Image (cartoon, rainbow, N blue to C red; front, top):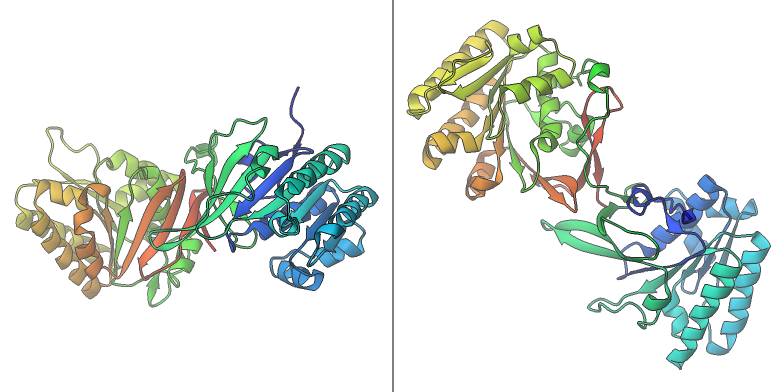
Length: 480
């Protein structure tokens, strides 16, 4: 027998908890002040009415109707209209005393029955519990809510519980045992930036694999799913040709509109960009943010020179280019992959081999190749350099010397340099950041991929795979 469910109305959360909350259940939503308990609960009611045709009642013991409506309108939730349509009720009971609690509960039950409500929020249990002198009385009220409203009236109920700063206890303790589900909201710091956690402490009748997920209040509450890099079946055969974003006289577009927006329009001409890759971030995951810049350059018939980082070779780069719908002829004409000599001869005209012993002679060969492409194309070049590959074949000091020279030459020529730094060489991050114009970092948390600017400083952003245009692009959602 399958468990009846009620969708939460929160993007991403329903996927994690297999469709939604158990129907006719009691859910505790707990957290410190400012973690978003009211917003989540209001969204549960609003989306239930608008998207699933389930009427709702919101009971508040701490906020009057006018304030609630004004705050919710800023989130895009017009509860006043829903109330006028007869689909929603807002009950405010401010400064309730113990002797008034029975009549309050009676009013709640009557409104739920009259409206035929299927969703109820009580905000907050913490305030209501303060009306009782005897904690035992609160247990009776909890059971009353559980049995008469959630079970008898068939109303899925969220009860908000406030957790004071510095405390880890949820309510009086007894609520945790009565509730069917417990959601804990947290506002923490990650890399000195706001990061919001949603922790599923309990969900009766369901096996939850991801009990911690990030979330944001951008537009409305949205939970971040673990990043899925696998493409749908047959997607490769349906790829469309990449549509470039026009550059400005001062800026190169990143090739991804969301990334352009994060960095005020793109990357400055003649600038150097540091891509710092966090632990457990895979090649396809950071390529999602890196590849569109190369595609944008290729769309304007500009040359691209790449010194691949560890784990990346020509076949991966070729596959990335094909993801943008480019032909073999275009790739072979514009791309140059600089590799270090091996026992096997190059298998493609794009591959340029270097000895990997003397950095000065190899760098001069690189410069000569760059000058040749400049002369042929008469346009700026894109340089993508894997820091770890240089350090492995030469030394840290030699690599930094060459990279510093690359920054200067890019500025003089109007090229764009992107340096890719992987976890094994974080000790050079500060040095590289000092001469990079932009330093962005890509990390993973609870399976989700995030990107943020170290220099200039930006907020954290969740990264999703967007295939809506027929090729892979990053979709960024700021954590607010």
